[in-house]
Image: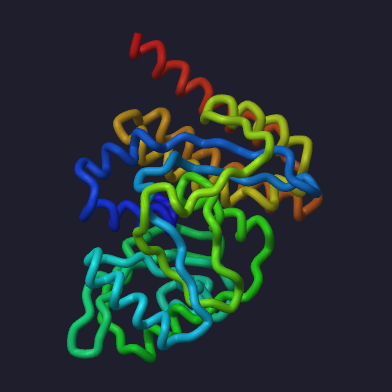
Length: 285
């Protein structure tokens, strides 16, 4: 019950980090940057779990292939960046350019073992997990370089590891590899609302007042819902409240498209999460 990025990130970490699931649960904490141009937002869905991870990229497939083999031999598992447009098991196949993380965990007899554990109902349909063995040519097609992306998508890549990192330029094959701890992260100036409670309070106001932000960032809140459902999986009310938020925001966008904005729907969904979290705090006292 995670995003495509964190599904592959956690699968990768399980082979490297003791108690990876628990450490990832503890790292989930929503923050939002609120001072970007044109009213844009940026989201960090969790704190860093493995600060050694960084992006690598090259425009040349032969160099990319060698880089993948080197990292696979060193780490035993590599996160690679695919394009949903090229994934036959994605509902975005041949429809949308969207970054998608999956993993390589073996290479034998000229074929790559590909692991994609992501399973979710998306706006374009249901994406189911995929495990298979692919040739060089087939893998090259899945990892074909992405074009320049809308800023909201680019910022998801920048913050996907829990702290801002440099992302290779458009037109490059991309993967993640391990290096010195913290070497990939860079300081990012700006005004952030830190922590899930404070971020939700801000977003509850902002998304009611700003229909452009609502449309642009509904999927960021969907990812936040998935993460917090994973973190709070022992609390039925909190899990249900986060699921309702994701559904309500998508419905609010669709309703606005029909000329019928639903601000109270958005407000009620955020209020339900706050109530569920308040009850959880009371129980813990």
